[in-house]
Image (cartoon, rainbow, N blue to C red; front, side, top):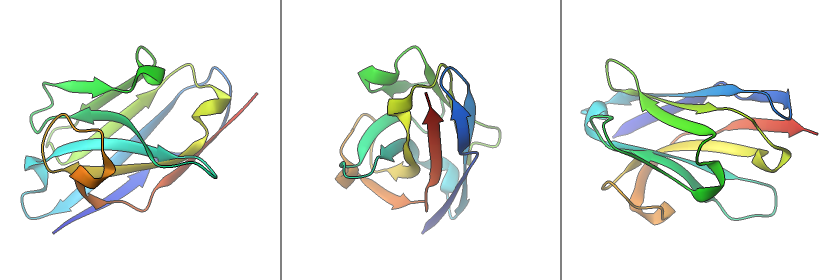
Length: 123
């Protein structure tokens, strides 16, 4: 089993940047594709960004393309989400998760989840 711990959230003004981190531990934790999701109050959890096991392939939901960047550290058991030009609508709890395979955006296709980190963007 893989354990995930997110960090880096906070309260920022619109236009600011934040970098979220997701530290994975456990057996073969660096061999998984990974993803970031977010959930705002009263809304369903939505996919934000995904990355393959090596870090060479990434994909994003349309609303964050050009603003957010997902990457893997070295060693590859840490995943980052660099968020630039933040907007109030980006306010949510952000979760990282291990993916069963690369390319999915469905929460059901992701296995282990972290506890989440709050991102609040004020206008």
